[in-house]
Image (cartoon, rainbow, N blue to C red; front, side, top):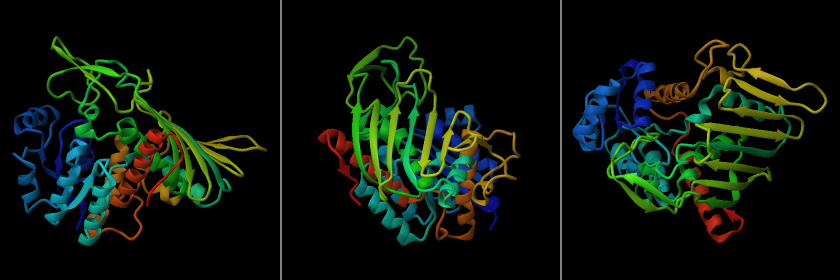
Length: 384
């Protein structure tokens, strides 16, 4: 089976759902339908964003025998039930993070996916910037010596103002954690992916800087800022705007990460540095084609993304020649291409580099430890 023979459906027509559709079209997959929170709203969005036909319900999409894969890009609180329905229908599934709101559900979904033999993936797309694959291969090859200290941040500003609003601020829809679950989870996955080491313990401090928010009645799309002349509702906030987290990895490697959605001027800023016993690596999403390599006794280097210079693992996910910058939308293309190669083969490969339900479950275990640590104000072990 070729990728063009595969038919996909997408649940969710917000910012991320549209990104999924566009990336699937780029790799030649036939996206035959989408579902939104209501057929009416979905049809308006489909016309504006050139989306495929709208199905009237999730059940209708899942029941279509001609669809092979379904992408779940809906609000967090319905991920678990929708993934169960997709797996139950015998379809492969790609789910946005978090896989579910708690580890009991993620463990159940992981077990169901393993028993089904179906391809399963969680959309930690940040690891599919090519230089993140390059960094992983260099760490694995021992090029920086033994990793000692992993630091970085994930910073945004789209929730800086008291009038900034979205369903991600509603605990019933997003879960008890917000910034950590939404973007911190990406950084945690990236740190574990690049280092090849799992986080085993955390010391976390969660912050709620905007403790009262004002929002209009009805839905507000992610990153939208215009409230118009609508009457605003005041609501007290408890979920995290930002977090400071110290980390311990399984071999004693230490780490430190800052997470924030209230950092003015930072639109979608990801940074990570791995300091080893011999050299260091640093990557920054705003200059994604550059991988900094630090040395003690000779000049530092900038390794540019170039398939002719990259490791085989990194070259595999590069889509353009050197000097032609690959950015955020390209990460979805690279991720989905690897997922759909397994779909075309009929099942998951033995050791995929794309994030599976096992990775999604693992990150939820870490974020739960973050929540416990901040509440108890002490070092907390990740309970695996």
